[in-house]
Length: 255
Image 1 (tube, rainbow, N blue to C red):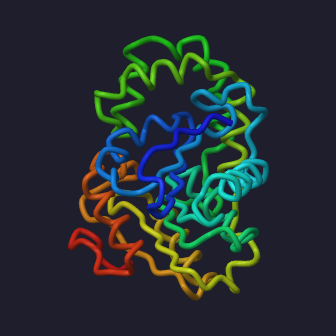
Image 2 (image 1 turned 60 degrees about the vertical axis):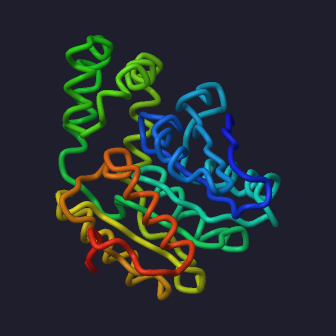
Image 3 (image 1 turned 30 degrees about the vertical axis):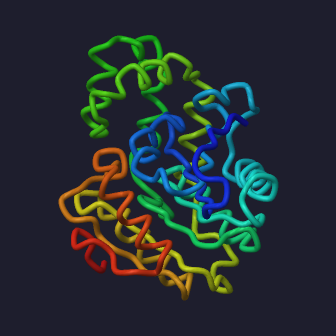
Protein backbone atom coordinates (compact mmCIF):
# COMPACT_ATOMS: atom_id res chain seq x y z
CA UNK A 1 0.00 0.00 0.00
CA UNK A 2 1.45 3.34 -1.07
CA UNK A 3 1.83 5.85 1.78
CA UNK A 4 2.90 9.49 1.80
CA UNK A 5 4.74 10.48 4.97
CA UNK A 6 5.44 14.10 5.82
CA UNK A 7 5.96 16.30 8.85
CA UNK A 8 8.22 16.63 11.89
CA UNK A 9 9.77 13.42 13.16
CA UNK A 10 8.63 13.82 16.78
CA UNK A 11 5.21 15.41 16.24
CA UNK A 12 1.97 13.49 16.92
CA UNK A 13 0.92 11.23 14.04
CA UNK A 14 -2.32 11.59 12.09
CA UNK A 15 -3.45 9.07 9.49
CA UNK A 16 -5.67 10.67 6.83
CA UNK A 17 -7.97 8.28 4.94
CA UNK A 18 -9.50 9.40 1.65
CA UNK A 19 -12.94 8.69 0.20
CA UNK A 20 -14.03 6.26 -2.52
CA UNK A 21 -12.81 6.76 -6.08
CA UNK A 22 -10.10 9.26 -5.16
CA UNK A 23 -6.74 8.89 -3.42
CA UNK A 24 -4.41 10.42 -0.88
CA UNK A 25 -4.04 13.36 -3.26
CA UNK A 26 -7.36 14.73 -1.97
CA UNK A 27 -5.47 15.76 1.20
CA UNK A 28 -2.91 17.88 -0.71
CA UNK A 29 -4.07 21.24 0.65
CA UNK A 30 -4.71 19.76 4.10
CA UNK A 31 -1.11 18.53 4.19
CA UNK A 32 0.10 22.08 3.65
CA UNK A 33 -2.25 23.41 6.34
CA UNK A 34 -1.09 20.79 8.89
CA UNK A 35 2.64 21.06 8.32
CA UNK A 36 3.35 20.98 12.07
CA UNK A 37 2.17 17.37 12.55
CA UNK A 38 3.42 13.98 11.35
CA UNK A 39 1.09 12.76 8.59
CA UNK A 40 0.66 9.29 7.15
CA UNK A 41 -1.54 9.40 4.04
CA UNK A 42 -2.15 6.01 2.43
CA UNK A 43 -3.77 5.28 -0.91
CA UNK A 44 -6.19 2.52 -0.02
CA UNK A 45 -6.20 -0.63 -2.22
CA UNK A 46 -7.59 -0.04 -5.75
CA UNK A 47 -7.06 3.71 -5.31
CA UNK A 48 -4.32 6.13 -6.34
CA UNK A 49 -0.89 4.54 -6.38
CA UNK A 50 -2.19 1.41 -4.62
CA UNK A 51 -4.08 0.08 -7.64
CA UNK A 52 -2.05 -3.14 -7.44
CA UNK A 53 -2.24 -3.55 -3.64
CA UNK A 54 -5.02 -6.13 -3.77
CA UNK A 55 -8.77 -5.65 -3.81
CA UNK A 56 -10.45 -3.16 -1.52
CA UNK A 57 -12.46 -4.18 1.52
CA UNK A 58 -13.09 -2.28 4.73
CA UNK A 59 -11.84 -5.19 6.87
CA UNK A 60 -8.71 -5.69 4.78
CA UNK A 61 -7.90 -1.98 4.80
CA UNK A 62 -8.34 -1.85 8.58
CA UNK A 63 -5.62 -4.49 8.90
CA UNK A 64 -3.29 -2.57 6.57
CA UNK A 65 -3.82 0.72 8.44
CA UNK A 66 -3.33 -0.94 11.84
CA UNK A 67 -0.03 -2.40 10.59
CA UNK A 68 0.97 1.00 9.19
CA UNK A 69 0.37 2.66 12.56
CA UNK A 70 2.31 -0.02 14.44
CA UNK A 71 5.26 0.33 12.08
CA UNK A 72 5.45 4.06 11.36
CA UNK A 73 3.37 6.10 13.81
CA UNK A 74 5.20 7.65 16.75
CA UNK A 75 4.78 5.40 19.77
CA UNK A 76 2.79 2.91 17.71
CA UNK A 77 -0.40 4.95 18.06
CA UNK A 78 -2.04 7.62 15.92
CA UNK A 79 -4.99 9.92 15.49
CA UNK A 80 -7.17 8.65 12.61
CA UNK A 81 -9.24 10.93 10.39
CA UNK A 82 -11.27 9.81 7.39
CA UNK A 83 -13.87 11.02 4.92
CA UNK A 84 -16.72 8.89 3.55
CA UNK A 85 -15.29 5.43 2.71
CA UNK A 86 -12.20 6.44 4.69
CA UNK A 87 -14.47 7.37 7.59
CA UNK A 88 -15.97 3.88 7.52
CA UNK A 89 -12.46 2.43 7.72
CA UNK A 90 -11.74 4.86 10.59
CA UNK A 91 -14.79 3.69 12.55
CA UNK A 92 -14.09 0.01 11.84
CA UNK A 93 -10.49 0.44 13.00
CA UNK A 94 -11.68 2.16 16.16
CA UNK A 95 -14.01 -0.74 16.91
CA UNK A 96 -11.50 -3.53 16.26
CA UNK A 97 -8.09 -2.01 17.11
CA UNK A 98 -8.57 0.73 19.71
CA UNK A 99 -5.07 -0.09 21.00
CA UNK A 100 -3.50 1.82 18.08
CA UNK A 101 -5.90 4.78 18.10
CA UNK A 102 -5.33 8.00 20.08
CA UNK A 103 -8.49 9.58 18.68
CA UNK A 104 -10.86 9.21 15.73
CA UNK A 105 -12.42 11.84 13.45
CA UNK A 106 -14.96 10.51 10.94
CA UNK A 107 -16.83 12.74 8.50
CA UNK A 108 -19.70 11.64 6.28
CA UNK A 109 -19.91 8.08 7.63
CA UNK A 110 -22.77 6.03 6.19
CA UNK A 111 -23.98 3.27 8.54
CA UNK A 112 -27.60 2.93 7.37
CA UNK A 113 -29.26 1.39 4.30
CA UNK A 114 -29.78 3.69 1.31
CA UNK A 115 -32.22 3.43 -1.56
CA UNK A 116 -31.26 3.40 -5.22
CA UNK A 117 -28.19 1.17 -4.96
CA UNK A 118 -29.65 -1.33 -7.40
CA UNK A 119 -30.11 1.44 -9.97
CA UNK A 120 -26.51 2.59 -9.52
CA UNK A 121 -25.23 -0.94 -10.11
CA UNK A 122 -27.46 -1.30 -13.16
CA UNK A 123 -26.01 1.92 -14.61
CA UNK A 124 -22.37 0.89 -14.21
CA UNK A 125 -22.13 -0.89 -17.61
CA UNK A 126 -23.47 2.27 -19.27
CA UNK A 127 -21.18 4.59 -17.34
CA UNK A 128 -17.88 2.75 -17.74
CA UNK A 129 -17.35 3.20 -21.51
CA UNK A 130 -18.03 6.95 -21.15
CA UNK A 131 -16.26 7.56 -17.86
CA UNK A 132 -13.16 9.23 -19.32
CA UNK A 133 -15.04 11.91 -21.27
CA UNK A 134 -13.94 15.26 -19.89
CA UNK A 135 -17.48 16.62 -19.70
CA UNK A 136 -18.52 13.63 -17.57
CA UNK A 137 -15.46 13.88 -15.33
CA UNK A 138 -16.22 17.56 -14.76
CA UNK A 139 -19.93 16.84 -14.20
CA UNK A 140 -19.04 14.28 -11.54
CA UNK A 141 -16.68 16.76 -9.91
CA UNK A 142 -19.39 19.39 -9.83
CA UNK A 143 -21.90 16.95 -8.34
CA UNK A 144 -19.37 15.96 -5.68
CA UNK A 145 -18.22 19.57 -5.17
CA UNK A 146 -14.58 18.73 -5.86
CA UNK A 147 -12.53 21.87 -6.68
CA UNK A 148 -11.28 22.35 -10.27
CA UNK A 149 -7.65 22.11 -9.16
CA UNK A 150 -8.11 18.34 -8.78
CA UNK A 151 -9.36 17.70 -12.32
CA UNK A 152 -6.23 15.89 -13.52
CA UNK A 153 -6.22 13.74 -10.37
CA UNK A 154 -9.90 12.84 -10.77
CA UNK A 155 -9.41 12.08 -14.47
CA UNK A 156 -6.48 9.78 -13.68
CA UNK A 157 -8.42 8.00 -10.94
CA UNK A 158 -11.46 7.63 -13.18
CA UNK A 159 -9.37 6.11 -15.97
CA UNK A 160 -7.99 3.49 -13.57
CA UNK A 161 -11.45 2.50 -12.36
CA UNK A 162 -12.73 -0.94 -13.41
CA UNK A 163 -16.24 -2.32 -13.34
CA UNK A 164 -15.23 -4.82 -10.67
CA UNK A 165 -13.61 -2.21 -8.43
CA UNK A 166 -16.56 0.17 -8.83
CA UNK A 167 -19.01 -2.54 -7.79
CA UNK A 168 -16.77 -3.63 -4.92
CA UNK A 169 -16.49 -0.12 -3.46
CA UNK A 170 -20.23 0.45 -3.83
CA UNK A 171 -21.08 -2.81 -2.07
CA UNK A 172 -18.61 -2.17 0.76
CA UNK A 173 -19.90 1.37 1.23
CA UNK A 174 -23.62 0.60 1.41
CA UNK A 175 -23.17 -2.60 3.45
CA UNK A 176 -21.25 -0.88 6.25
CA UNK A 177 -22.97 -0.73 9.63
CA UNK A 178 -22.03 0.40 13.14
CA UNK A 179 -19.31 -2.06 14.18
CA UNK A 180 -19.25 -3.86 17.52
CA UNK A 181 -16.72 -2.67 20.05
CA UNK A 182 -17.48 1.05 20.00
CA UNK A 183 -19.15 0.85 23.40
CA UNK A 184 -15.82 0.24 25.13
CA UNK A 185 -13.91 3.00 23.31
CA UNK A 186 -12.58 5.73 25.61
CA UNK A 187 -10.50 7.92 23.27
CA UNK A 188 -11.96 11.16 21.83
CA UNK A 189 -14.24 10.50 18.85
CA UNK A 190 -15.45 13.34 16.63
CA UNK A 191 -18.24 12.72 14.11
CA UNK A 192 -19.12 15.39 11.56
CA UNK A 193 -21.64 15.68 8.75
CA UNK A 194 -22.12 18.49 6.24
CA UNK A 195 -25.24 20.59 6.70
CA UNK A 196 -26.25 19.88 3.09
CA UNK A 197 -25.75 16.11 3.31
CA UNK A 198 -28.67 13.69 3.02
CA UNK A 199 -30.86 12.91 6.01
CA UNK A 200 -29.48 9.36 6.16
CA UNK A 201 -25.99 10.76 6.78
CA UNK A 202 -27.19 12.80 9.74
CA UNK A 203 -29.05 9.77 11.09
CA UNK A 204 -25.87 7.73 10.66
CA UNK A 205 -23.95 10.29 12.71
CA UNK A 206 -26.50 9.96 15.51
CA UNK A 207 -26.20 6.17 15.38
CA UNK A 208 -22.44 6.42 15.86
CA UNK A 209 -22.76 8.75 18.83
CA UNK A 210 -25.30 6.41 20.40
CA UNK A 211 -22.87 3.49 19.99
CA UNK A 212 -19.73 5.23 21.25
CA UNK A 213 -20.00 6.93 24.67
CA UNK A 214 -16.90 9.06 24.02
CA UNK A 215 -18.24 10.39 20.68
CA UNK A 216 -19.79 13.74 19.87
CA UNK A 217 -21.36 14.82 16.58
CA UNK A 218 -21.43 18.17 14.81
CA UNK A 219 -22.96 19.64 11.67
CA UNK A 220 -20.61 21.67 9.46
CA UNK A 221 -22.63 24.74 8.57
CA UNK A 222 -23.03 25.59 4.88
CA UNK A 223 -21.10 22.56 3.64
CA UNK A 224 -21.75 19.27 1.88
CA UNK A 225 -20.23 15.81 1.99
CA UNK A 226 -16.78 16.78 0.65
CA UNK A 227 -16.25 19.77 2.93
CA UNK A 228 -12.70 18.68 3.95
CA UNK A 229 -11.65 19.04 0.30
CA UNK A 230 -13.63 22.22 -0.29
CA UNK A 231 -12.39 23.99 2.84
CA UNK A 232 -9.03 22.49 3.91
CA UNK A 233 -8.32 25.49 6.11
CA UNK A 234 -11.42 24.84 8.19
CA UNK A 235 -10.65 21.12 8.24
CA UNK A 236 -7.16 21.82 9.59
CA UNK A 237 -8.64 24.06 12.30
CA UNK A 238 -11.02 21.28 13.32
CA UNK A 239 -8.21 18.72 13.39
CA UNK A 240 -6.08 20.92 15.65
CA UNK A 241 -8.97 21.58 18.04
CA UNK A 242 -9.91 17.87 18.12
CA UNK A 243 -6.34 16.76 18.85
CA UNK A 244 -6.00 19.31 21.65
CA UNK A 245 -9.51 18.68 23.02
CA UNK A 246 -10.14 22.39 22.57
CA UNK A 247 -13.14 24.43 21.32
CA UNK A 248 -14.21 23.71 17.76
CA UNK A 249 -14.62 26.45 15.14
CA UNK A 250 -17.94 28.31 15.10
CA UNK A 251 -18.98 26.68 11.81
CA UNK A 252 -19.48 23.43 13.69
CA UNK A 253 -22.66 23.17 15.70
CA UNK A 254 -23.94 20.22 17.74
CA UNK A 255 -26.05 17.74 15.79
